[in-house]
Length: 263
Image: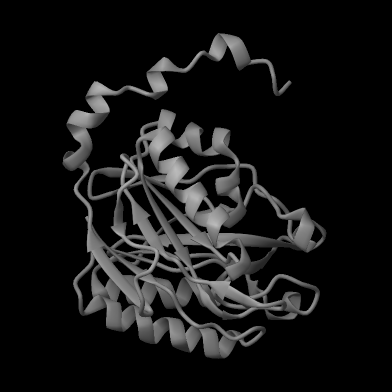
């Protein structure tokens, strides 16, 4: 599976600019013939606050129109990062996923909302996972802060997900946390984790980039230090097959000890 990560320098509260930039970068990435293109979190608004609500996509209309057109035109899967999405009278942080024919596979609403930034006061949390196939490989999506919650990620791995996409909007001051979480989730669940983060000015400070791919052994396929708005690499699920068959980490879990700890 060949994957292109889009790491754009977005502008706060400028959805028109951000959509145009995203379209341009997707077309450029398409020239590298990837199977999958992945966008970062909130690529329409680059912000989650009371002002950003005015720029939320209405039922994902603009997002779905753009990504459907490009996925069909370029014959690629697109993991649509996420957008602020106005739907059913609420605001969601939503990732739309499209197949090579431009068909909507499904959407994922961010489930764990970051209370420290005020996201909980603005966004309605989702409750469901999104698991889908990319050319026979089972994949899933979690958004940004979701990756902090190990049990949530493990639920994907237990259901056979081999590649987990994590669109994000982490600030540069938190890059140690971000890098550690992506790598830890990959190692403990023995899956590939694809983290895609934007750059550019945030409401306070800057987004930190560090878009990356980590394999089930914790090795970088795309390094955090890689530069440029487009980062492309190939992963091979079979490369770590022997490792996963020898070291069955999830099979060694003691659910009898902690099944009821969260009740």
